[in-house]
Amino acid sequence: MTLAAAFLVAGSPLPYLRKGNPPWAQLTAGYKAAARSLAAARPDVILLYSTQWIAVLDELWQTRQRVSGVHVDENWYEYGDLSYDLKIDTALAEACVAKANVLGIQSKGVDYDAFPIDTGTIVANGFLNPDGAFPLVLAANNVYHDFEATRRIASLAAETAEMQGKRYAVVGVGGLSGTIFRDEINIAEDRLASSEDDKWNRRILDLMEKGETRQVEDLCSEYAGAAKVDMGFKHLAWVLGATGGQYKGARIHGYGPTYGAGAAVIEFKF
Amino acid sequence: MANGEILAGFLAPHPPHLVYGENPPQNEPESEGGWEPLRWAYEHARESLDRLKPDVLLVHSPHWMTQLGHHFLGVPKLSGKSVDPIFPNLFRYSFGLDVDVELAEACCEKAKAKGLVAKMMRNPKFRVDYGTITTLHMIRPQWDIPVVGISANNSPYYLTTKEGLQEMDLLGKATHEAIKQTGRRAVLLASNTLSHLHFSEEPALPEDMSREHPFSHEGYRWDMRFIELLRQGKMDEAFEILPQFIDEAHAEVKSGAFTWMFAAMGYPKMAGKLHGYGTVIGTGNAVMEWNLQEALTSPAQAAL
Image (cartoon, rainbow over all chains, first blue to last red):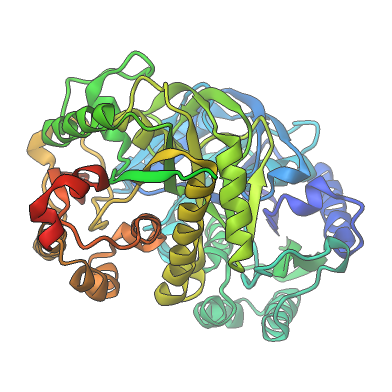
């Protein structure tokens, strides 16, 4: 096993674009701690899956060697621009495409100038890999892939990295509970929009901390439905699939609201 | 006092395959064609739009989905290369559009006055969504008419379909008031597909029409039932079955553009003109027109 590290992180641009906002301080501090762990783990590559890179036909993988530009979030454009400069491990990404197709998961590489990189990918990479020290493999969230399919795709990505002899870090990017404030709020007073969501989030985080992998998996579907979890919590499926699912515990580096929704920065222990 | 009017509304779906099939100079990928019946339908719609000579096109797109309220493009000029994140192999389109900011601001204010959360998008680097661009290209490839771009708030998905469409109804009424106040001669574009279940894998040659057909018999039957009501001007029935259509055919009209457009037009009980119907990766797409100008002079429409 050449797993270097694994994280589940938030993809909202708000803490990234307003790092000084007090309700988001836990998340930004958590991200900084996670970045230190990642740097210490010195992976050869990061296998990253963001719920915000949506696909509907086939599984898409970024295969352009360098992707740079400025993205403006379609919801939070008034908070500023998201610059990015991503280095892609194209050899691994192309191998993932090939392997996925062999396994019956129709896949395609994406190698286009001006391809729109999603907010979650930019935020996670910007926080965790700010200098671009570690190349990336980016896989899309095909909305018709369920939890198990996502897990299989992550697993094949990890196996392919191993075949190439690479130490890999795994990053699943997405939110926790999804209830948001639907009226404008003072962001300095942001909080979880639903106390029930907050309880659910804390319950799941607590189980992760204790390494109760089976309980977390058993509760995933119920949690996703009850707390409107981002994309059915498929970003966890990505982490589980790429790590074999047997973490011994987790460190919650940060937990907090993003306009009422739940978000966390989690590092898994193996 | 200004007295603007809505000249017409179009159901104007946005599969980027239609742009790809047409091979306009703005789009990088080249095709052998494909989806001709739908593209020919848009040719008729373009001719009709040309005769209407509107001051502005308003487009409501499900691919600018917003969480916090209803948003309006608020930058006078927007340009760039739009690469479809879902179909990047088909759609890499260089665009430039002029925004009617005055009308957009009026729409925004009227929406707020009706209790909706509404915002102006002022960031000049904003990437206009491919739904907006595809619909605008297909209806007016010259890009010589100013635009108001409106987001699809996620309320029909986040709340219930009924609650969400109630918001779209208010948004439509606000749009009507803003058009009237600003004196614009406007055309509305509802950028929506009908039945929306689709294939999950793409043929090696995307324009291979031997692979194109309705995703399901049920979806096709639903589309025909709905279109027939629209063709007959039975709008009360159409809106009565709309929630069932949305649920059973996963119709994209759930995102609100169709309801927004009809609310803005005052729910006219007039027959829609079907320019054409076709499927794209299995989804059902109709190009339809409700020409309020013609209705004023048509005894047949007046009798409905």
